[in-house]
Image (cartoon, rainbow, N blue to C red; front, side):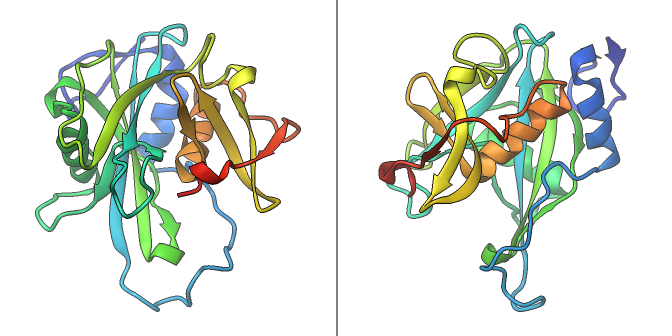
Length: 232
């Protein structure tokens, strides 16, 4: 294990499995690359909104590592009942993208910023069709913090997804590649407890797995259409 530099939360030792991903976050590297999308508006067509999401991993080894996800409120107008990482749009008072990610995670799940080590922030991911850029922020804690729904309108439930083992993000029986109207939309994680993760969040999770030395969802994996009830 390697000591973290000060500045995130309490002083702790970063586990070896996280070191390669941590170094990429500290350098601000690109985590998810996206191809041009027909929905992309012309450059400069609208002001770009800043958002950030928190990739919080808890555990001291791959055998016990978990990442926190949340099921969005079922009454929300945007993507109701979908699974996502904690996060949201920047507020005028936010110091930076790290502040945004931590503030949103606290508001949504009760995560206490002082209880985690902030490792770094990856390069912002452009989402031009939403006139938005999303910065993934990486944090870690040696044990699972006590989290729970803070606002039931925004968040239906909080879920911890293990990285390895039965029912995990790398369990072959719980992951496949998705199709939407016959077009590939990337990895899908169909996790126990009806936790169905696809789209932007699944792409981040896949690259997180690659970053800690685990296999991504193979391109030759089974493909299935995203069920109609999951497309909201």
